[in-house]
Image (cartoon, rainbow, N blue to C red):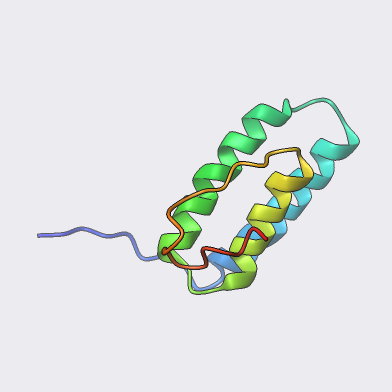
Length: 86
């Protein structure tokens, strides 16, 4: 038996706003080390590529990583939204 948590309808939209806010704050202050936020965003991007049907959400996360200086390409080239980081 599989127990999967249902994601609330507004989860991805709220996540987009939170990512944008966190990245903006990180660029304007030195309170949160960029490496920690980049690691968090990498995890979110992996989750979004597999569980989200919005290219925009993946793009916001990937763009946030890029703005923070992360140039790592995530996931195989044939996964969902593989070229969202471009």
